[in-house]
Length: 467
Image (cartoon, rainbow, N blue to C red; front, side, top):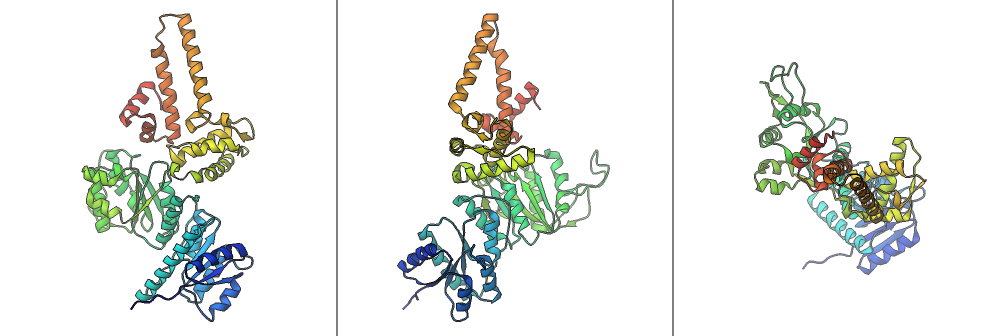
């Protein structure tokens, strides 16, 4: 017969109220709970007995939770530790993993979530002890977000921080896929090697092969010297290939061969070149659909999709918008050399309700513009451009009224005035410039914002003489 012993949980927290809430939650779920107001008392008790799971706050007077976790690891005690933290940025998440924590629990937490986490930790501990394997986690930096979707991104990066496996990052444009790639590199065993990034859509298709693999002198017209490609530049480090879904099928075949064999030839070269490179790829496309439609090689897709991280769109993490707005206001002020400004509550509500089709990249552009154009120290709703969700009703009425006045004036001066012929180019020019600004200059994304195809946008830019 299978009997299950009562789980033993220790809670280390200098806050009596937090400790009390957790103790009651664990006890009501049939767990044996012991509380400690400081880490030193718990360390002393560890010399006598061991719990199944330990929960500790990250900030306590004297010894903090991370140092406490490191002390336990130094004692060679195999114990799953859950770290409670009020900080929800990437650094804090990884610091918990670096200290040897099983998982971290961001405040404010749900008690049912805490109980579930303890159960998972205890089960993982039993499996690990049965299999005779331990697990070590390591660290990262740079991104912020408290939304569950972002916390899952942080957790995944933390879990991968000791591994060198290939990762596929998916998500809409502007969601921070390159930031995730950099974090994976900076908190991996390859941190001392180079991080080389290449947006495959930024290079002409006929030059991309040379850009990736390099070329020998005389390989083609204009190749007057040998060139080292991105693969060789990234040797010993990480190569980040952005917008991988737009790569030609011929180049996909060459990339697959490199991933499979670890070697390649420069364009026009006869000597095989061996490299040690970790590949991180990213795309805003649905690669499964691309595979079904024959636009992307299935075998390459499986090579790249060893681990996947999805960066959530900003509209799915609205609770992070105020934090991001404040962060980028301060950063934009420092970069532009202007005093930082605050947001009125009404303005922040307006920005939080906006869908941000260009995601974080568009939010960054918005903060840079508003910190320069807003007349006062506080950014009011009327200071927010309509393209960023600001003063939509008033803004719409103002430009419609202005257009009406202009049309009436033109007709009064000349009843045969070709209104559309005069107004439409200026109208399209303004919309195209706004969309390109919101999309960070990326034409494919700007075309989506305008509701056009990329070819239509390219034709309009040429017709209107835009650069």
